[in-house]
Length: 492
Image: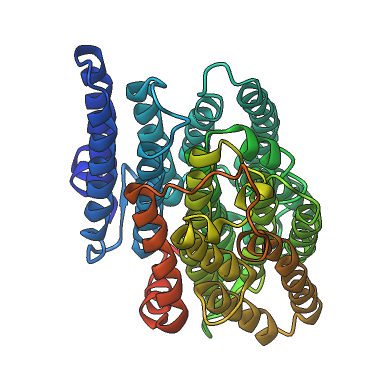
């Protein structure tokens, strides 16, 4: 079924809620002096949009807006992840001292606009809409990165983000234009059908895919399009850094999967995915995956700023997630979706604790965590320990289960070199996570270290994320089943 624009609105409640809330906040900002409740409206809007997304789970798969948007289980799954990411970013923003008195009306309007763009990134089935959605998220992200007035570091980060994003966007558009010229269509399904013709110019198609991959790779911080990530993560306000690490990255992976799988691959009668004839893009991404995780982990070893350390960690995890992408199987995709969901919990939890430490001490380095467990921060230290150990893949936490499924998918396809490199990288990662753990528990506080005053708002959120990480480490079946059920692509 392919619905026109007006009937499609009945299935677009998550997006409509975000639009109405963003416009409402912007208008209310003009007429009220009490700005705090604007963030509370944004929080309610992201929660409502996420709940509205759950109502779409049982809807029959269909195309919306004349075939430009897909409403299927895959889109619904990512809308839930992206809605929760926006909810987490707003929650953190309400507890952030960095953002006090920083034009909350404009801030929350732009943040909701970014969330809206990510929703369309996850469901776009047309090259034009995919580009517009990605650019919309990018433009709002540039503004949010440099939102702090008087922060030279934030301004520099926003400028670097803009420059790298502009270059990646230009390269991607050129690749899309080549695809359009070869296929004569902007729709993924039509492109896949026409490029499956044995007469397709395989070298030209491969070049086009590499150029398009530049845009997707920039969004997920994949090597060699990762160079913006450390500076942007360090310069942006902490809630925005957290949002870029989970929401923006998840949206990038959703675009990557939908473009390369239902678009440029097809399912055979035995249920296996096969790429278009003559174009072996999985081999390229195998190499990229190994380089990405290796560079991210090795670069994180020497970092002393925790935001920057988590930025390189985020790059490494992009390499891990790509393991599921290259195996061309439902098992690999299921592992990717599961890992994206667990990554939300453990990474957002780590950033929330970092924000609490920064609120208390004004610092973001590892030394700021010195003796945290012994100076009033036992709960934040425990939450941070759970999240970091999960990121390292230590059982029985959610990160271990996620890596288990990724490794199982790779080993099932006999990709031994990829599995070995990923295993070595997982061991390397333990070292730099352990540096923070050692500082919190083994290093005693010295005179002058402030006593940790944990506010309930941020502490409850960090605790909930840590508990979720533990629960998914011992009872993961519902989530892995949901990930498996979310692979029913419309038209693929």
